[in-house]
Image 1 (cartoon, rainbow, N blue to C red):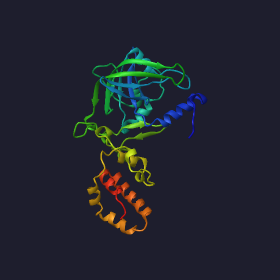
Image 2 (cartoon, one colour):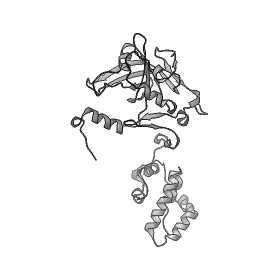
Image 3 (cartoon, one colour):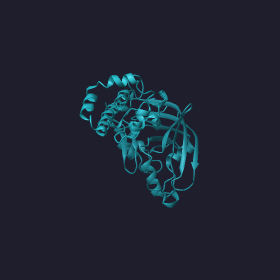
Image 4 (cartoon, rainbow, N blue to C red):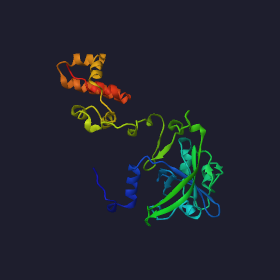
Length: 298
């Protein structure tokens, strides 16, 4: 493990470590205007949602590391405390990247990147018509943290209106991650796409009180086959199967075959039993995985 004190390396070097490690990061594609009404559009991956009542988003147009200059988006929200935060999906990521070019003040990145301006209803900056979701916001506070290159400027925004394309909604009216097809920022030139096999579900622990990894029997917890993720899923189970359930499952054909094949080899029996349980567990059937793991060699 490499241990680094930020004071022992250059700001640029530690900046690259931060962006490489804290990833993926959602992208705030922020449209702003200055006091003359000039429009600016720029992406920021120092961004997230921080509350719902009121709905609060925060992004940071940090000072440039190389020369300590500020960005037009920051200047604009200080002049006109309003912003539209547009969300980015895969179909618009290349245009979004083009908009990050450091054009001169007064240049409209909507025009440069080929996006369409859509008038907002409650704020002055326009929204990106092509964005799947856009949030009209008022700026509550701009909180500078530091004065040197790389210093943060937290733009704290309250959402006044949300615009959501019906094309990204599922049959229940919720945003579908598959339809949203969101992209996020990694380190360097890298991005990632939240779609296909990259998406997976995990049951939230708030719906139940799992037994915890500490209550998993030691011979299972210390398995050479099961991973930390496997143990986490097992530990999120509220109860272990009853002895009668375990006994009934012992008649499973695969279990019977393993008991016969490894009758005189308990180590191999445990190994193959755990492999079988792992496959079932990763398919989502936690209770059956437990029934398998709790089998004993006769």
